[in-house]
Image 1 (cartoon, chains in turn purple, blue):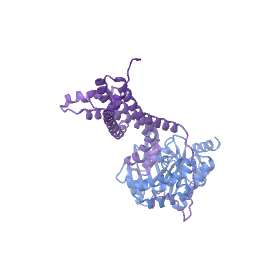
Image 2 (tube, chains in turn yellow, green):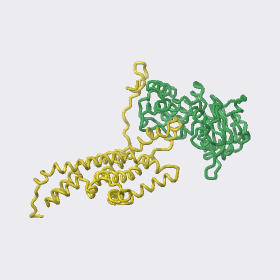
Image 3 (cartoon, chains in turn brown, purple):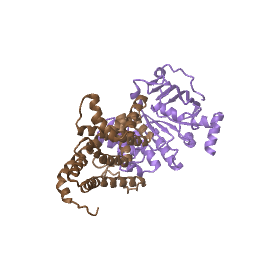
Image 4 (cartoon, chains in turn cyan, blue):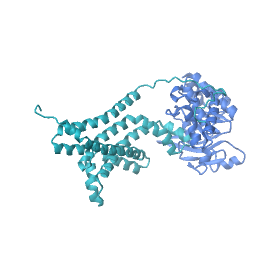
Length: 244
Length: 269
């Protein structure tokens, strides 16, 4: 260690290449998170369905993705699926499918927990006001479930951002892949992988701080806000601003 | 006066209504079982327009289930329900008339069911805007009127967390009023409130009956309200209506030992 000659100039010179990899990483992470957050809603609903076969199918999907390593899922979609279907899926799209399928399973469980935390009477109140099932979901259940599960959802998203590094194993040119190439070519693994770690940290750490903040806030009782009663005089109609 | 359960035909209750016996709600032969426990055992039940009916009885006797069946939140195994002349449920199944009939019914629950992520205004206007397709200004005007009816007009901008229990129940009543129901079902809405606050909420219901002509069906343990403000008292026991009479008849003249023992238990603990 004492004889090691750091070569940070190499890192500086490789930064454009690393940033290109980071762009792929971020693109993959954002697409995965957005798709999973949408797809997890029907999966969570299927997991709570009254029809047993729908519930079992959803549970089966979730358990398969929760109980197998993500690397195996990635390899299965990249190498095994083409053997089964005869269709070769490019690395980026294979990675996107595998990561989305995996995150959707975990996200669906977070959603389900959130959905079930909304008191049934609140949903019944919506029913009595003749809101449709979709309206109950959109206006009553999902906003409350998302609010309650925000720390869990953010944690899952941080994990997913880090797990995108696995896609380097199927030759997707993400940050990890480019770091590996540079380190292999330059024999400067210490500098290159330290830089890669710092880049991952710089992005994930603020999100982690936000998650902790939301968690702390959700544990505290809500502070009563000062509330000014509406004046019912004709000059000041008792209707919130902007609704007329 | 007593024991009306299961004695009438369930063929077509709307025909009977057409013949002149018009009730806002008519239920015949309602049956519901939970885990082999009969909570509604061939129950017949009527409510007239503008009538206040209090339903009393021990926990698990079937009173809340009756309200939930009328509201459509619980599916009975059998029975007919007619709402304002429309047969909305036949032999336990909803008919094509269900949606039209159900629009006449509003419900207020025991636990506070205001949506906590919305303020009072949004709680009141969501359904009118999304279901009745009202404009913002129309919904706002109606919200102001509904809140005034329950004495909560000053709280339209308040968040739900800023309201006390009694205030929440009054807003919940206002929310039900937004859909212009002709019948409000109240399931133990005062059980979590202090007696003075409960009296305030029950006072709102009484005023709505007199001013709006609303029919109110109230499951309660408040014997004072049942005695003073109700037009009719229905006593449930083991899924059967044992007493169905005016408050005076039920509390003063009726010889039903079960009702007497229940009233004593509620009054004196």
